[in-house]
Image (tube, rainbow over the protein chains, first blue to last red):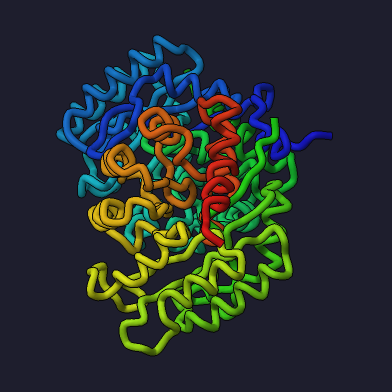
Length: 261
Length: 250
């Protein structure tokens, strides 16, 4: 039987594996991303054989997130089923947060993405209406993380408070690797997302071994990073084929499949 | 198709910070077999804890002599304090051992990029057309541009490129024909290889992985799934570096 790695080594499209990317982005940032178009992203997905990507706009990092949600909605409409959306927002007021999340849900967004590089902590009370909606609808919530102690303290509170939401910790293992494993073992609704620019050798295998294969999901961070590069860490991992398929596809499918419409 | 791969950014033998065991040569050979990488330009890495250049180079040459798939990339250092072999001898020794490039680490090895410090070394390298391997970690891109302009016949391999550096890598490559960009490590630029090829040509992009620090498989899929012709993938995968090696004055 030809393995996924053998097929990837030949550049073969892996359509049929049902790969889902749980961490994508659209939009411009301060450094050069050579092509910002959703069409180019989808073309790259087609070459690899990636079925869908869940994207948030990079305005999760900075101002006017509503503009970002509009751009993501346009991409969702242009590529239905291929590009799915996370709502991004800033906690200006509980009412505004609730409205933006409700608008996103009504427009077919499948989850929420929060980023703390803006200096706002995840336990900011004004975020709660959006988290409550995600919990009620059993949606995924993707958090940017970098292994900081206060982040894990916040996730312990949020995972207990919103037990029906799937909390995805981006960049798992970027630092404080053992703590990611520990928190994923502690909470049924916490998942580890493996996107990370350098991809330290053996990290995917260690997260799978520590947290369990059903708790690890693949995300690329594309177009912030390269989707064709990030997929390699799973395809080339020293894991059984069925584990690679769980990380690349089945776990994401289960997380998205439990969303209440 | 299966593109032949020559990894220009890899190695073994160094002691990772916080670890008690060095990266074994067998780990590199096993990874190459795992990913069907045909040949590698090897250094002693990780090098953060490595401090004895002549001993490291000797260990590198010994390993490469024993394995045809490995081509050495020894470190060269200006002999400004007369504690090392003369620059011409270091370069001749590297070439005699079949080196495919020489690694430069000015900050780590305590020298600066000024003619009074390293002019003899660069002239010796340029005379032999022995490519120099430069990690972005150790050089500013302004310094690389200065070197490329001053020594136009010296091939420069720029590796360990950050995904945030594309804005400066492109003009560097467009301006200086002797600058080559290697993939691998943090070169995680969306559509980045394609843009390098479009702006600088397929002849100056080299395949690298960043092993053992990085997952080598990422660079493999980045190339194999790039929006490029098979011909360009072969050039990047191995052809370009083989061409640079053939041009070395041995």
